[in-house]
Length: 396
Ligand code: LMR
Image (cartoon, rainbow, N blue to C red):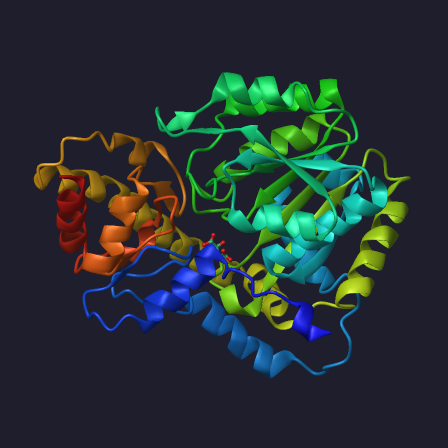
């Protein structure tokens, strides 16, 4: 039977990560996968996580099953972090399950959508995170794209985006990135969130908000501005969150899916369907990451430390957004890269072509995704000059 299988192309992001690891060049630069690195090029465990892990060792007294919804304390914390003191929480209209990572949350959301409307199409931004499309298709959903990033102006294709969204039928789902759009870094402003919301109401589509980078854009609360407005206005939505980036818990695989319903009468139906999906895929999530996050958010001291550490990551990336522009200018590059500081989060497209990307990799061991998406945290004071010189060389 296995002989019927054909080899499958490696995932473009994770394949790059493997190729970078194997590259013996001591000057190599990894701008591929969206993982935060410090000035030493290291993805360190956050101090608040270290402290929470110690607490866990001391306090945990059982390894019994955790239940399909996962850690209830974590779920309550993550709802508060996302929504703040919001009516969807006060009115008891939200149910959350903690999941194996943000990707797990998206897959559970996809299966939940399939149960609610097997004919639903999910609309994603063009472009979007490469795995969105394959994951939704694997769950049996139809996927369509709506206009989003304009490669020429390096901004949003605002008119085309709203024209596309105005064609989405009721019963479909529209995925929107809460902040730090992956891969472009180009986010909706508040007026655009308002317009998006008005269309969701008018057309009757359900928003699925993917918030994988809360705290990496403008700040923890600031990054939820669009989500909170949307949740205020629409009757139902799905939210997928991740603690990979903002808590640096990548390999612990910790995220959550929250379903917001139109009245608390629907809550039990949504909750039981959500849990039925979870049970049929992995039964229950792993506990470790959720317990760490709960310990941090249970403690005022650890929460303050987390806020500080998160701000350090956010600010370092923002500093490098400006530094890329300065260094390229210093290398005599004529092209305008000022768009980089108008974007948010881990990524921006450099806007260079395939051949130039290939040369950067072959001649300089500088790794970025084939779309020219760069993960800015891969830059530091030891490699930024090398990077700028290399980019200037391939642009000549
Ligand atoms: C990325 O986009 O680089 C990250 O979300 C990691 C991944 O799983 O692709």
